[in-house]
Structures are given as C-alpha cells and as structure tokens.
Image 1 (cartoon, rainbow, N blue to C red):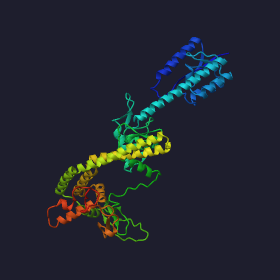
Image 2 (spheres, rainbow, N blue to C red):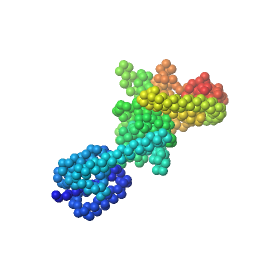
Image 3 (cartoon, rainbow, N blue to C red):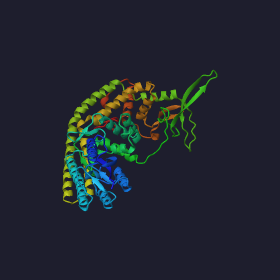
Image 4 (cartoon, rainbow, N blue to C red):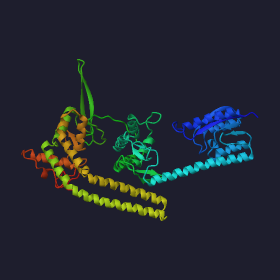
Length: 531
C-alpha cells in the first residue's frame, strides 16, 4: 500500500512571540525523520491552537482530507500534538479502526496499527488529557492563593501592567493618567462611551487592528473595581493590595451615570447663541436669539443679534419686544457687577479661612477616630461572616452579596476618613474657588468671552432672571424658579449695606458666621454656617 503522509505540527498559543522555537524544532525533526525513513509527505500543516478542547480547524480539515483519500498517514512529533481531549483522540482511533487511517508515525513514540498499538495510543491520549487537567487544577490553585494574598490574578487593565518579576499588578506610569481621565470625563455625564473610546484613541490607546475600542470594552473598563483597589474573581469582589488609580467616590459616580444611561436616548443637537438659556420672558418661556442681516443699497450689509421670547406657549400670546444683543449683554453685566467682591474683602476672607482651618484640625481628628472605629467594626463583621459561611450557616449567594455590601461600605468609610484627615478638601477649596469667582466678576463682564459670561450668570442667578419691556432683572420672589444661592445673597447684601455710607467692610458680621466657613449651606448670617 502506498504511504502518503500529512506532516502536522502544533503549538498551544496563537501569540507569535510565544513557543516560536517549538514549531521550528518540530518541523526540523519531522522533516529529518521523513527523509531518513523515506516517507512521502504530501503536505505540511502548522496549527497555533490548544488541543485541550475540540474544534481545531486545521486538524479537522486534515481528518477530512484523510477520509477523502488524499492521504492515509499522519506524521507528528508526539501523540499529544494530535489530541489532548477525548473527542479528537477518539476520532483518530475510530479512523484507525475503519482502516481509513493506516499509519501514524512519531519520532518519540513507536506505533503499530494493531489492537495493542491502539491500546497504547489510547493510553497516551489519556495521559495527555490528564496532563492538561492536572495543569489546569494547579493553575487554579495558584490563582486562588494569589487572590487570598490580595493579588490580582488576571491580565492587567489599562493603567496597569503585570510585573514580570513579582507577578503582581503594578501601575503603568505612561497610561495611568489616561485611565483616570476616562473615569473623570464619564463622571461629568457629558460624554458617551464612544467619546471615551475616541479620547483614548487620540492618546494612542487602540485595538490591535488600529481602531478605537468598542463600546463594550469601554464599559467593562468603567465597571472594573480594580481601579479603586478591589478586584472581581470568580463572581466575588476581593480587596486588592495594588495601588488604586481613582477613588471609590469617583467610581460610584461613574456607576450612577452608567445606570442612568442604560437606555440610549438620541437628542437633536442644538447650537444656541451664547447667552440663550439664561433669561426667561414674563410669559414663562425662555429667551432665545435670532440673527438678522440688514443690507444697504450701496451693497454693504450688517449683522445684528436680537434676543426675544421663544413664544412656544399655547395658552399665552406673548407680545414682548425683542432687544439688541448689546443692550441685553449690558444689562446682564450690570446685574452681575452687584455681586462682585472687592479684592480687600477677599483678602480678609482668605485670612479668616486660614484661621478656621487651623481650628478645625482637632475636630477632624475626632471625626477620623470615630470613622476608624466603624471600619474596625466592619472588619470584624467580615470575619464573622466568613466564619458563618465556613460553618455552612449561610448560603454562598447570601455570603457573597453581604460580603460585597460590607466591603463597599468599608471602602466608602476609608475614603471618608481620608477626606476628614485632609480637612480643607471638604470646605476650604470650594470656598476659595467661590471667592476667586466673585473677584473675577469685574474682569469677566468686561471681556468678550460670552461663554464665560453665561457660566457666571447661571452660577449667580440660576433661572431667576426675567425680561420685561426690554429690561432684564431678577424675578419677584414668588415667581423664582429656585432660591438664589445664600452665599451670593449675602455678598449682595453686604455690598448694598456698605455702598451708601462708604463704610468699612465688617467681615465677621456681614459674611461669616463663626467659627468656621462652609460653602453651600445657609447659616444665621446667610452666606456660611457654623459647622
């Protein structure tokens, strides 16, 4: 019988830089073996895929060609190159039984197509499968031990890399800022998953094909607890020892945005004039803008912008006239200047902030102690919960859910303690920023930056401005959309109190309620409250 062989070589991975010498060494040895034994090789097949599970395309095509009569023998380095699972091994033995496959040659294993030979071949296939199964068990045992030590057991996500020496998760200094910025951008609720992918693409983060990340990959990144110090393994959240790139608070904000956006909503993109959306008409509708071009007989033209009511009400017929943009801008600027803070006032407020910061250090230490005790109690709860699970007092599903809940609460308390220890991050920086904004009003209203002006007007007035008879002013209290922020009210009251008499600014009685400033809460004096 004419012997026609197909040479088959395989390695277990499709990554080019792994096991390269394995294929090269197999091909050299098999070609030499074929020459030394005078074998006729009609084709050489190379496959880069694991044999742990069935479904190798090149291997299956080889068996199909043998069934079609193109060849009747296989030349491979070892039986484990052909099969490491029961299905592929059974197919080969079945073809030998049917005398469709007549010859198997291995440089490392002697085989004859007899009952004893097929019995030994079955043992070799079983041994190969045992090796794979045992290796998987050992790998899983090692991964579980890494998890117990708090070491992330998988491939490093963006912002990290797998340290080659310690085999742990380490921060990648070249990409950690990009990962953090991606979370910060999405937390603002102004970017889509496609926008985050485009941002990463512009900074060199792309797929192997050179394309932006798909939306699903971006979402997997945004829900990955690795970035705040925990990690998920086997459906369970574990506390990691790696460095966190973001805070738990930022991660929770991103999850809230993702939850709100579970259903895609398509909105028509609108590009309004810079000062639209700031003032309401007396009829209750918003003020919009319109461009008008006036053409003269000499061929020249001028463009004007008019602000007027949208007139979208179906019940009220609005007859409010339009106003030129220059007058509209001038009236808004005049209103904003009533809330501008003199630099002398700012200096006194900043000096008071420094004193209050020092006084609050003791209170922060006491608060940190209380939070530290809560964290210790949660740690004890985790230990008791684990003991209950090991004693089989609770089900695994209940254990995992309760563990995730306690660990999340513990992480929140740890970040709260960090904020308390920092102290000024909870109230000092917002107050300084507000003072800076109040002082900058003088420059903003005199500039041509309409976008900055709009942001300032919204910050001070919200939606409490109205236009009547071409005049812009504050709405009456009963018609206001929401109360003005108390710190702006207090600042305006202080200016009105000192302006008529030209008197000195009394910082403690006019703007500050001792002993501490806290922006955003209304106290007895309007702007600030006692903490």
